[in-house]
Length: 418
Image (cartoon, helix red, strand yellow):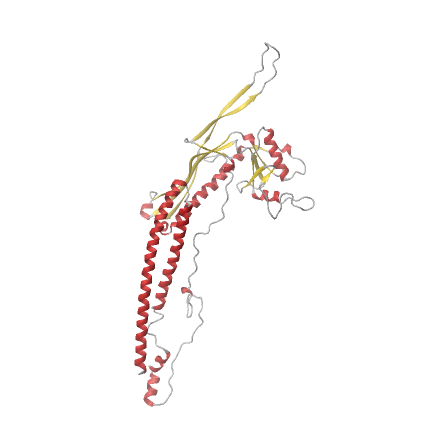
């Protein structure tokens, strides 16, 4: 009787598990259908994003918001799919058999129990393996670590990014050629004077000019990725595009400030600037004093400085300057202040070497000409890309920098030159 009831119980248990398995399969198909639908939506918006990048240089805010939402929903569905698959695997795992016997069934089926029933006396024993501790280990008895899934955060964590500000201080321009030419006055001998008298010869002055040119230079870099990963993770393509443009702007700021003009480098503002006149220094000058004297040097050259460029370390030193009583002279530390010094805006950039400064009439004495604005292109026609299912992602821009009046820029060091 006991065995018959046990067999019936096992049969009912198997039927119950088959029903649960059927329910799991229905849920699995529903989630897969939703994933397929979401993938199609993501691909459509990824194509739209690629077109916007090509046309505008970036993804429009509305498209990016929708795409990020679709990707987030897709990740949630992936988690749900994984949960169902793991539940099915646990239910029908070889390590968790459906027909496992209970302790009572094992006892009744043992030889000792059968002999006891025959003789009517004796002892029946059943051996049971000691239960071990359940841990997060991935191997050994009791180790369930392989069943623990990490939490995957959506998106990609980026590194810190520099804020680009130098170009915003300079006049913008465009060119359709590979170089920019301009005529610059190179000399003016002003002999203007009152006429000696009626009929007397008037004074003669002299002017001289020179033709200058600045070549258009190319700043570029590229990445390589598989078609599969870009198709499977649309967010990755927009991320790479964003980093590609950032890389161009990073190098562009360095070139505008400090390009040495050799090879294919731009000739930047600092190499063309006039050196700070050391004779202007006074004993006990602070960094604030030195900058005011640099502004004076620009003014004496008949220009008016429009901005100051410093390294963040030097700007912090200026803000931390204290008076004899230990009070900050620059700002209220609880509220901060506008980055201005001697009525001029201050730009702090790591592109400016620490311990140096640049002061100048940046709004009128220099100009950046764009030949080709920063753009990202994707191609399979590069090397063996077609055969290996790879794509090349290239970002580049072409520009020229003209410095019309080097004497309107003053570059120097805060520490006096020996």
